[in-house]
Length: 113
Image 1 (tube, helix red, strand yellow):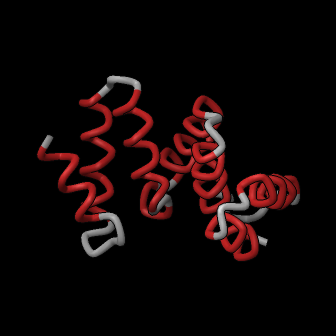
Image 2 (cartoon, rainbow, N blue to C red):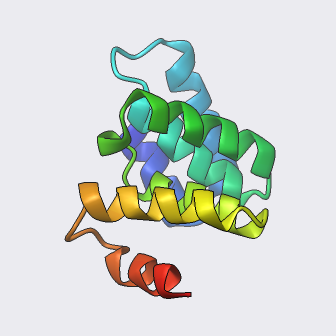
């Protein structure tokens, strides 16, 4: 289900992705962290910032190493809310856990600002 939801997300079909991830979470997966992270990213894209932050924090607290791009999204939420120190902390975590990650260049640029 997560794979299909990520395909929806990639195609910017955020509503379908959200529904599918919510359905998967109701089935209580053994490892919900990737689902929390993906759902947080989808909710962010749907401009449901408070809910996005809640799911991204849930993923981060359980396992930042599994949160992936969700860390970048969580950092962006903090940055947009004016909490730059929290954003920087999250961005540093991303670089620490994903030194060759897809978003490293963008995150490094954000840390320079």
